Image (cartoon, rainbow, N blue to C red; front, side, top):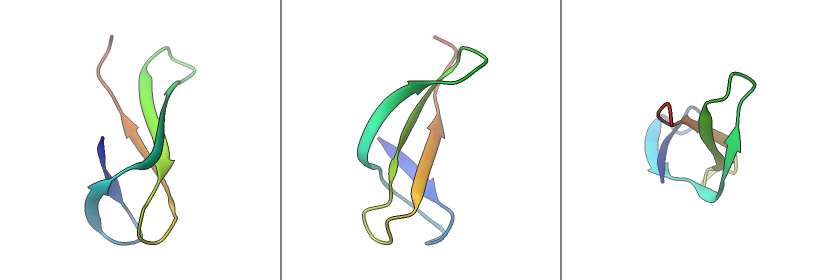
Length: 47
Protein backbone atom coordinates (compact mmCIF):
# COMPACT_ATOMS: atom_id res chain seq x y z
CA UNK A 1 0.00 0.00 0.00
CA UNK A 2 1.34 3.40 -0.98
CA UNK A 3 0.92 6.50 1.18
CA UNK A 4 2.23 10.05 1.49
CA UNK A 5 5.03 10.86 3.94
CA UNK A 6 4.71 14.43 5.23
CA UNK A 7 8.32 14.55 6.43
CA UNK A 8 9.87 13.29 3.15
CA UNK A 9 7.21 15.08 1.05
CA UNK A 10 6.82 12.12 -1.30
CA UNK A 11 4.71 9.02 -1.91
CA UNK A 12 6.23 5.80 -0.60
CA UNK A 13 5.31 2.22 0.23
CA UNK A 14 4.00 1.98 3.82
CA UNK A 15 6.24 -0.26 5.97
CA UNK A 16 4.57 -2.61 8.49
CA UNK A 17 1.12 -1.60 7.21
CA UNK A 18 -1.93 -2.89 9.04
CA UNK A 19 -5.61 -2.16 8.50
CA UNK A 20 -7.42 -0.24 11.24
CA UNK A 21 -11.01 0.96 11.61
CA UNK A 22 -11.54 4.60 12.54
CA UNK A 23 -14.25 5.85 14.93
CA UNK A 24 -16.61 6.69 12.06
CA UNK A 25 -16.41 3.11 10.71
CA UNK A 26 -14.13 3.79 7.74
CA UNK A 27 -11.09 1.63 7.14
CA UNK A 28 -7.54 2.97 6.97
CA UNK A 29 -3.97 1.70 6.64
CA UNK A 30 -1.47 2.63 9.32
CA UNK A 31 2.28 2.08 9.26
CA UNK A 32 5.61 3.87 9.03
CA UNK A 33 7.85 5.43 6.39
CA UNK A 34 10.68 3.12 5.28
CA UNK A 35 13.13 6.05 4.97
CA UNK A 36 12.60 8.28 8.02
CA UNK A 37 10.38 6.13 10.27
CA UNK A 38 7.61 8.73 10.59
CA UNK A 39 4.07 7.40 11.06
CA UNK A 40 2.05 7.16 7.84
CA UNK A 41 -1.73 6.93 7.49
CA UNK A 42 -3.92 6.35 4.45
CA UNK A 43 -7.73 6.47 4.48
CA UNK A 44 -9.37 3.76 2.34
CA UNK A 45 -12.80 3.64 0.68
CA UNK A 46 -16.20 3.33 2.38
CA UNK A 47 -16.35 -0.48 2.53
